[in-house]
Image 1 (cartoon, rainbow, N blue to C red):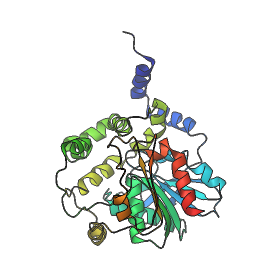
Image 2 (spheres, rainbow, N blue to C red):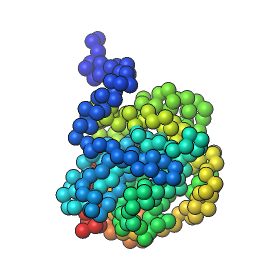
Image 3 (cartoon, rainbow, N blue to C red):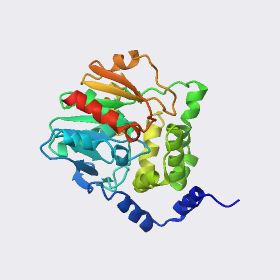
Image 4 (cartoon, rainbow, N blue to C red):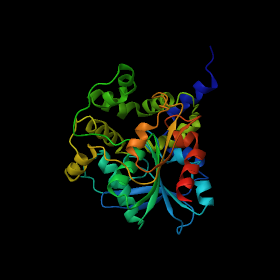
Length: 328
């Protein structure tokens, strides 16, 4: 049987050179703003910026294994209302780099949250709003807990995601444990080798399984793929998933922070929770009690149709509308 056009495209993607892929990315992102860089104590953070510099800042935060392209549809309506929108690459992604080659490539939840605060400090932002999913939502949740006076509002895609990294978790139901196969995989030496050698295969599989009702094209993936070739990507991902399962030490500067987070403090800033109706992790509960218990100023909770785990990419309108509702 002759290969399909899709199969040929996939085969071509495997053999494409780094230079060709970079050229393809540049062409695909021709409408995106240029990448800017800002220096913090630990990182040189790459980010994209939309709108006027005097607008109130909104920081959009991606998760694993995605990048800033997940938010491509979100900034325009916010900019139209006068807001400044900043979309940074997390540590280990895209152009973001550690300043010191000797710095351990760690990525516990407290570090990702501190990166957010450091990013705001470096840009001189006294206050800001956030929207994030996955790792980005976790960073935003922690920033809201530790610095509530600085976070004017939060849109939490996926709800409360702060982890107890002090006490090892107990096994869950088989179906849920199976969905987390990648986390157990990354806690093995084979998982390190797999992520190093097969990262794009793994990531594309996660994209498809976490948003089973969404059809990602090869172009969709190729626009983000270079972000995962960051030299620190593997180390950052492996540490994140080992630390959360109490299989790797964290940074000493965050020991007390992690102890506080293990108590799962309530978030007090004005918030809206968005949950994707078509998440590969299973349909969200219709009962709002859990979100109401963890967000004391919960303004709304919405189950968003047509959205999987990568909610901002699938329903950017829902994210933008929630932010505008909180801020205007």
